[in-house]
Amino acid sequence: MKGSNIKIEGVQKNFGDVQILKNIDLEIKQGEFFSLLGPSGCGKTTILKMIAGFLEPDQGAIYLGNEDITKLAPNKRNVNTIFQTYALFPHLNVYENIAFPLRLKKLSKEEIDIEVKKYLELVKLSEHINKFPHQLSGGQKQRIAIARALVNQPSVLLLDEPLSALDAKLRQHMLIELDNIHDKVGITFIFVTHDQAEALSVSDRIAVMNKGEVLQVGTPTEIYEKPVNEFVADFIGETNFLEGKVVEIKENYGIAQSDFFGDIKFELDKKVEIGNKVKITVRPEKIIVSKNPPTFVDDNDNVIKGKVEEVIYSGFQSKFFLEINGHKEKLFQAFKQHHNFFVEDSSAIHWKDEVYLSWDCTDGYLVEVV
Image (cartoon, rainbow, N blue to C red; front, side):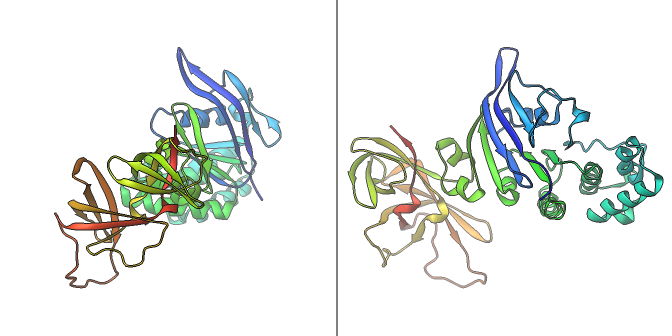
């Protein structure tokens, strides 16, 4: 496998009196597509700049493979960075932009020609070899920036929100391109983004950050399905939060009494005791919405009644915002996927309809226990 692993040990960074990073420990595996995900100002770009060598930590160490690179100059690290602005040379054509780092290495003209054309083919832009940056689209500029970064054959490629300047459709296309390029070159990619969908769709693993701390590291499935706390659950996708007090612990699930929802069954994924106050997350797509009482209900299922306060149709699904037990101030969300063909349905759910909501207790995940 190509690339190198990155290890970050006890890294801290202050800008003046503001602590930007708080004792960061991370290990990024060789050859993986790893994302740093979090809101603006959480410290993810600061970590990227430290790996690149543009910033030095106040405390801690950074390793590339087995080498301590904490104090190594940026040009001494086998790491390349792609910035939001792509940083192409406007006065050089595509060929010369990609060739630039190879000329610095004093490679022969023949070697440069072979490498430039190889990486242009990788990013599928061979026909644009003589164009200048101002003649390229945003997506094409990004791919040229990727080719220029990869032609150096780095151990690690750092991507600092490289899709943020692109429109939504082009972003989705470029995500697929990035993933394909990663699969072909096989080196370590470290991707910084604040967009949850981007991180979930391309990453082998994700580190979710907030306020200078890493809150959770895991696969996209682990992060989405089993968030460690309320912030991660809320930041990744859409969810409902239910609060209550534990009143009973069964063999396979617990029961919490909620002022809004009555008794709620939840998975015993964390240690709880009778009397604990808990917060439970339930993803909207886990909830079945029906006008009639559910017919297949077992002891593990939650069933509550609600009233539809809002319906948002978005083609492939409808989002329902529901009032439970008269509590309009705390609307509940549920999604309903549509069939791949249109059917006139007399049981379709509409505004102000009374409905039943049901979900399995294993879909209620504990994010807070007090």
